[in-house]
Length: 70
Image (cartoon, rainbow, N blue to C red; front, side, top):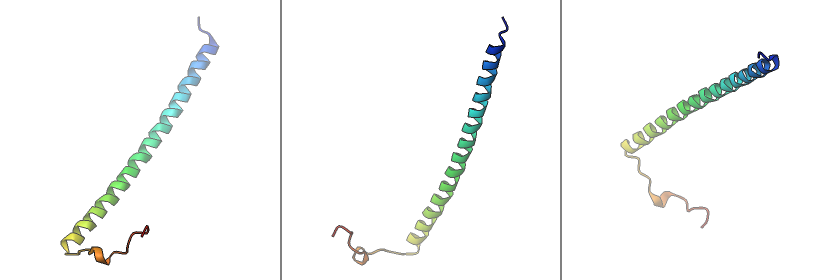
């Protein structure tokens, strides 16, 4: 009834699942950290854009060089 090879197989599966779960947890933590960095960067870009608009900085299309396909 208590087959040692079956117990070994189940222990092996549990160890594999624990390892996989730890890897997924680490990947999720890395992804959340990257999202936090991107959020901070985007916030800074939006603030800079707003400050440029508030400072009266205007961009004239005539001052822009033509697109590369011309």
